[in-house]
Length: 246
Image (tube, rainbow, N blue to C red; front, side, top):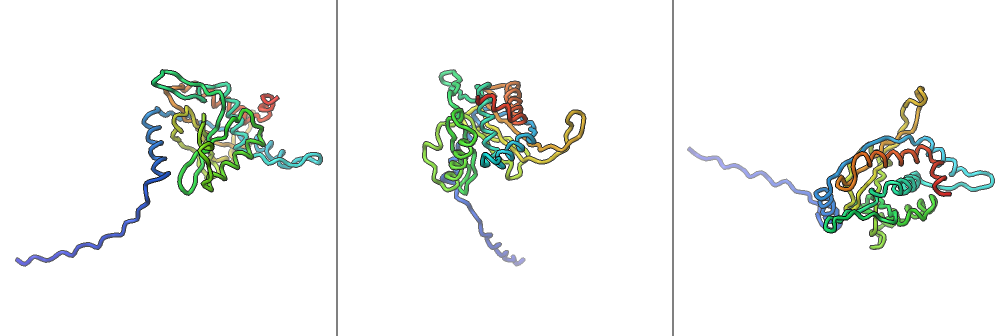
């Protein structure tokens, strides 16, 4: 019986992306974090209505005072710093060899920033010494440097807690990986108008989801709830932050 020759299928061209440089560094650090620290993520929601009113009032200014531009993220960072002062366990690092949890004395907030080359985390240092406007200006400057690949080593070192502001991209929830060896990371998601019950009446409020990922070796669930509740209280009652700044 005569055998028919089978024609070899033409090879399909393959598209590849180099797995090196920053992308490989990110992968290595993420893997280290995920397989070293047992991650737990706590979810909650925040009523942003009053904070957005304050932000708008500052921007409008008055006849005697020019408007002030302060981003929502600047309020988040200040509220986090004040909350971390009450819950320093989330502003800490675990040294397993020494069997010690080191409580950081400064509040250096990492800003998870997406760039063309991948995720990078510049650090806004000594937030406890900065006003809202200073936080806003320094945060914008760091983000700009990150996007333009102009960050120095100093800009990337010394973080004690990280934030991920993914709301502008439309995110409604996530379980981020910790920026190891930090103990906590808070992500802010999309703000949207929703009907909620206030004083037994249905009203429209600006609501946002928030997620706190933490190292369960260092902190427990009850602490994460209490910490998140305090942060929410500052955001929902923004004038309460003023009493901490006097």
